Image 1 (tube, rainbow, N blue to C red):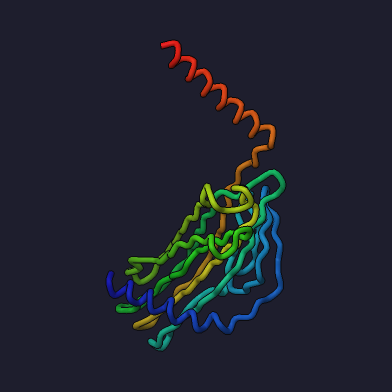
Image 2 (tube, rainbow, N blue to C red):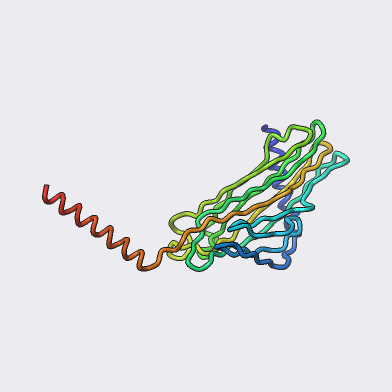
Length: 224
């Protein structure tokens, strides 16, 4: 396990150099039930569709393969801006990825990356990130899955606590080291959780209710 983690960290460092040469492409927009997704056209992630408030990619050629024993690394970087529709706010995000692999004895294969959220209103001071990595891919072939979750903080993000736009970054690396093997990605899904934005009248009623509760509690103490 320790050797695997070292390999994964080395792969993530190598990928930073390769990402530097990637150029931004055309922007695509996909509409969900309560949100809009806009993102750069990353060919490795494949065609994107919406399912409810989920953005679903179907990669066709996202693979790393070594037939000679030399290390193979395939990195990809995707920026996704999520915007809530009117009367909704963003509350949480999840990332799920899956794929398959084959490997010879002694070969390490895996998927690594980070899932990052940036508060589009407050800027660089408000960010959250989660790492993900596949583990225990020890069979000669099989399937793999990874996942990461990000919750929008209750305080400090958005406009007066209402978070309507978040910039997500998905950093991906597929790698093969130490022998002959292949690993590929079949699906990438980004899900957004939203909640209704309370209207001003609702806030007023909540404050009035809290004030009434406080008043009644004070009268009860005085009476006792």
